Length: 324
Image 1 (spheres, rainbow, N blue to C red):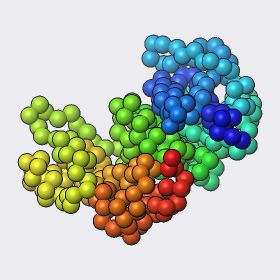
Image 2: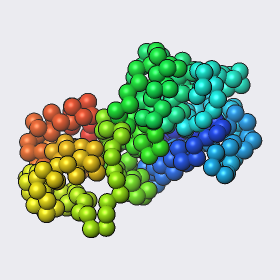
Image 3: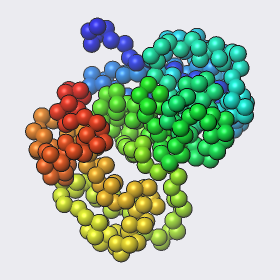
Image 4: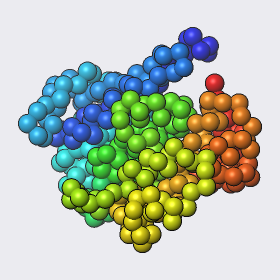
């Protein structure tokens, strides 16, 4: 198939009442914002229900789907947003209508859940023997209903190949950006993140539940220091230097940084440097050693080590997949 004839990847978002409206809005916004180098859309997003009837949103509004369950049969990816649907949420069962709809999904279709959408995948048996996640507040209920699933409440999302699950609410943004990054590389995902004004990357293994009390007006944060670090990744940066810029002791800085990001400063820096290296590999022809230096990772050997640990491939393989 030529590039001219290639159609966008078709995503169907299945609304099940009462649907979590925040979750339902994430995939159309993010995937709908993804564009190729020629400006053409990379995804076609269809919002569907079991029928075309309005779907209760649970907070004073309904959502009107574009299509009924027949759209699932033509999907390349199916996404189930969070839902309070009885059956999957209460006793592990599916209605016959929902079972037929899910049964119509083609073999090989990628299946994704956001938040409590994982309960629907669990009831359908799609998570049996797999590792998955859901909102931390509902993990105990999930374990009781679906003991055959290895549930991990300590991560933002789980990528199990053809089945992916995310934690609650905003973690759905992280998972959708991860999918775009997996499909089309970091540069495309970063453009989507910039357009949507969200962080470009929070790795799946980051802690799901992070205490983030609203700071007092006079309480210092690490946000300005983090912004400075992103502009200076090519320089040597250590925690003492960051703490000094934030006008905090190292101990206070470490504690506040972890409270705000869920990561230690060193781990956060590595994550940002790898992300910057991925972008350089996609958008430049710089040798691997130069990419490593510009990303602050020192040597090509260091970059290869971090790329294999976080992405699973070498810099060269990554560039061949996503450059141009």
